[in-house]
Length: 512
Image 1 (cartoon, rainbow, N blue to C red):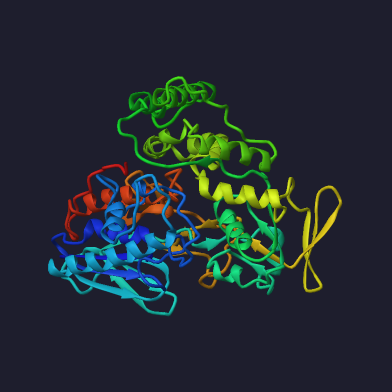
Image 2: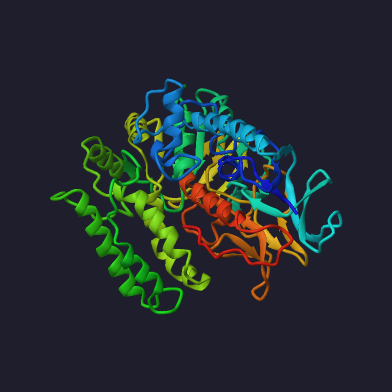
């Protein structure tokens, strides 16, 4: 029986999975299930040249190993680029789109039929394939439009495309002056040039919103979040020429205390701090390594970090790509309860430093803060409610401020998977593109270290894989194309080791 692969999703992760499968023998069919064009997901589907990637060209490619394929793509089309550059995001969308068509030609030459169903997947159910003379288990992917498609292997590649609406604004979902997401950015550009806008969020998508709002007109924009902190500033995110982190030490951390995770949190924290400092100092001998900053006045901290970045004094930035790979590789081996206990202590650090943003955007924000066109509120609102043609916002100090529009940049997530008697349900039943609540209930399948899904603790691993952002329950850092490309390579390797209809288990190769 030949493999019939269904790829759920149409963004960069889906194209990366296809890149590693195209041309493989024994694949009868690859079917994409995605409502939009393949290659143009939320992250890279923009047409706005002002919106930059937050990762450098070197780690923004559909294949993780070797020279960046994205760098080669840019060079072949006459775009001057360096591996450390932060490219406009629309170029990544074009790259994914063009590579998809190239890989489609490669697959067809190998005898694989490639199809695209422009619909949304809502469930995956196991069933016996009646079209074969074997008892091989196949899967039926149910579609929002009422149809379905079957496959022997399912790759869940949906991105973090679902905006999370803050609880206090859920009663006002659909309000004409409430935007659940800052994307596509042309919605923000259409706001009146003198509008007063409150942006809920201070992280990467909120920075995109500020860049879009402040670049033209005379809008007054306020950013706010529970942390009140902007990400750190960096010049690049590239792979090191030589390893700096001692992998044996990090592997020992994963194995210490219990078979699958550390027991002594204090010892873990000390070791992590020591190893990071050692790696940073090895790359910048004699450089002063500033203590991580997780509090302070955002405008002051932004200015300090911008000046250090402009002077090339960010010694931690060149260990970040290796750190992301290491954290994903080691933490994925821990038990779920260990991950749940340990990772929250590092969340603020990861948010600020691993998800740092480019110097160019930091310079823009600093200028607008100085001019008074942009403000980062020191506290999060106590109350937000419609008032007249806009919004009334009450701050913790008792003052009230009015805004014409509210833009939510408070996070995104993958449509959640919940287990059913025969498979998984995808999402909570909301319409495509609707805001997703962060507290959807329901039993969740387990994502194994191999990226396969297991419906019940005592059940077998299914031939369903979760890649990229969809694997966030197992891997700490997934909103990152390099991680998705690493996942895709491992899944393709597993798929190449068996034929549907056999009972042989897949090799337990891990994701990194």
